[in-house]
Image (cartoon, rainbow, N blue to C red; front, side, top):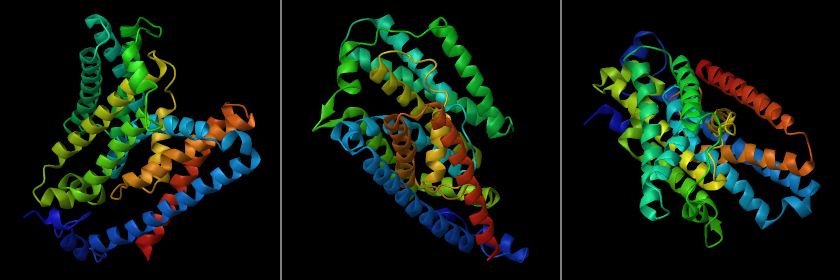
Length: 352
């Protein structure tokens, strides 16, 4: 049995290395870091509750309603799909700046496939879904291979994919938004509900539940955390680290593709210019939720909480009548503050 199957974020192979340097065992450090990020996740819940309370008191007649709650949930669900994939990427100490562009590219390819087939039946929608998933998967595969085989940093690799996917999306769409989304797709996934809960929210929660299970209960999740914690130790445990990293980026790309398909259903257009801040929203949600940008600790359940905070904040700003530009200022400032706090906590924990 692999050593990693019994150690969530480290391996016994790491202990001799740490001992030789006079440092504490990797498992002890990882355990303390997990406690730190559980605390951060609890803090995130308190921040979310505080925001809900503030906006409820300031605009009770507008903010406190089932309609507004559904609006916030639908908005958050779009970010949650890509944030789940981003959680795995950041847990291995990587980054994926291309998710917003991959989302747009996948939506364009999906719509072109559905228009080429024609009609409005379930087979057309399944073909569009397959096209979106495969498009996102392909970009994830490129990111993973360039990062591992090409030796290029994830930051540069995914920044290049961000630019390339954006350009190709515009070329395929002819430089303007495409329309003609099948009516059935819009009426079901776009605006349909089950027991009062929108299908888009149900899809996002299903993906999040699956992601949480994989991260916490499977070998794939253990390897993901272990690579972010001590990649060299994982290599010494006879794990094919490069292949696993590629799989993580493929997962991120596929979920971005799924988000592109959901976006088509919601807006009934390709929204070429509507996803510039999606990457920022996803990273912010992941880090706020308790996943460390340095890697080694990841929590999908924390990401669910984290993705709600920007959505509630944005909705509250709109209700209060603030300029939309302040939303981006607040999100950018929040990201810097959260990362700064995360790094300080981690350095302090390693020293103690």
